Image 1 (cartoon, helix red, strand yellow):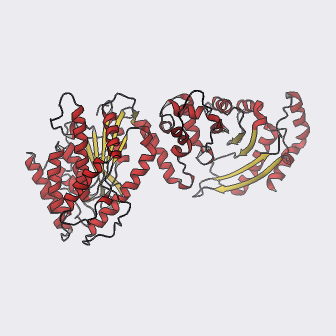
Image 2 (cartoon, one colour):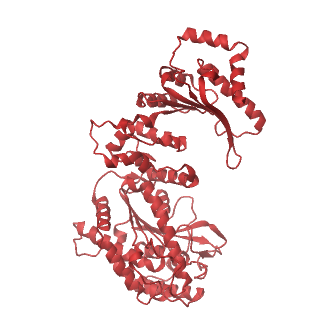
Image 3 (cartoon, one colour):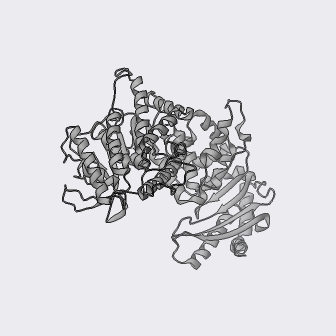
Length: 578
């Protein structure tokens, strides 16, 4: 599909009966957008497919996505169909899995008849849809793999021949409350069930949009509609004993946890809007005879809240303004950092709280001295490659990846560039354009103490020359040659590492001897799965050990004297071994 400008994307959570709240919220959004539409006017009803470029959903959210995008229903039409589904499929507590699936099938077939559509209509057709959509499911044979049932083709992906009816049954087939779904179309004998892994498909909407519209397509708005959350209600205290309802409660809580993670990652970018009703205002349990009406009433109360009103206006502004948007590639980079956080929970740091928080409290002015602000140094806890990448993009003024969290405005840019403490960790790793990077760190760190991290066996001479005038500022040195190198033989590696470390100290920090160090220690640690073995020497300089800068000739003579017969190297090796 051709790339589009200012994409509008939507993600709809799964959550059973609380899908009715999504329709109420969408109705409010449509009313606001239609009011702003000079062509339609405030009274003309407009369907979501005319506003969105891609809608993704899971479970009942997937059902609503298909009603909006594939069947091109208005919110009012979809609400009537979903009400019918809730009454006949989700409310009854005494249905078997087969009966529940058959009831859902009848509801969808009736909806298609009312739209004048054939019951065997395929989800994906050759005709390009005005609004694309997808739903998620699992294969019964391999529940770990997510299956995307799309209305559109993507390069290198198999196009499913599944029908609209079967796609709805598949994404809603929560186990063991619905029967598995075996599509009657196509030649692949595969059974589908609902996925429990991504009931909140926001990440998947971003990924699918990249496949559909391309990396460079800009995003103006990313809407996420939840199915309610509760801070006080125990999801297992269900009055009618319906285990399906308890399962849906658990799903909604998992959805909200993911929503909080997404808001942390991309909320500050300014394009993300999340709406999910607070269930604490509804005291009746699922299965109550008036529960659907109470859900709608609870949603109406939520929409009247001043905070919700403000968020809805922000969404409307993003939709109608011509401001700068973020590309799908940049959004993907931000998500990639979030996935790294998930894999490294002990090293996770809140960029917003630790770096950007002071900016919220201060009215930035050109005369304000940011360097005196108490900031947490993120490089002490973040994986250093990620932090360097963040700062590199700041330097180059390229709005890519985590930079979207740092340079949302000129104020954020000023905060980073004018905070010397954020530039004190200098890494030598023989990377591309390292000299330029080292120079920038040295320049922006002003007079702050430096922490040197050597991640290669032979550091670049050019980089070391840049360090020379700043030796008096060096506070600590960490040497980790062979970083992330697979080590076949541990004992051999240890001896080689000691020699390499001693060689670096002897040749590039020739004024130093072990007696001039304090807090010196060497340590080794192995990767979680034994894939690498890292040894590190770190020390603090005693007083002003490097304040004396020797003339080049004198320094060379001193090295010649001390290293005769590799004497100084031996001294360092003995110090490290000790």
